[in-house]
Image (cartoon, rainbow, N blue to C red; front, top):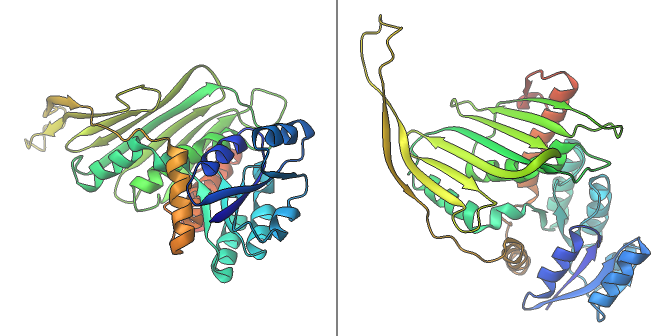
Length: 339
């Protein structure tokens, strides 16, 4: 029986508590929450679970083998570091840390201490993303040419991070999961329309060595909610719409065929359009966070790396930091090798 402790019972903490408490061979031992009203809610919801306002109580508890962290980004590094040093395995809400340097230190510490460090990149455990990865690995799309993604909604404004740090980890974790190589450079533009001093709308652009480009639009200031990604390949294309109830993934047998011709006739486009069928594959419909919780606990038992381990979280952090730096430099191209 694995015991877990949860730090943070605000927005995301209740979801972690519910899914881990439902796992076989797992017991939710304790919940740490600073706000009295949220702590009281946790106590009413889980009367058999201990509650505390001091996270050190969880670190000293020998019945707790792993700590789940669902707190503001600025606290992730300290809480995860202390948990690892206390001999606990750790699952941290995204993004892994506030800075790239903290992410590097945390991964090195976890390896030195022999602890498992995982990041809560929940979308990697959805049936949709699992199916897309299967399709790409089977080379059905051919060479990936571009990724175009939009994740916009109205709110939830964060006081300590901008919209890229809040929303981009979802899409970046997916892209890093699907594309083995890292981008060579990042460009970003963002704007703040409020008095809290963080960008609430941003555009992020990634360039890869093989010509692949990935472009993302993030916003807290949209009248509609959109979560859509298009992946274009030389053979087929995918539209992934997370808000679709039944057909989240659609595979289009569409594209172009460029015909050889007179190289001197540069003004004559020699392009044919190819249009075939659309297929919506069957997807697994298990709750992603439930799948993630089960996977994390299995990794704890077998001492194997999770799909979204700390190093996967670091790949995302490197792009986030490059994007943040690019915004501060008015969209200047930032090469990842320079970070």
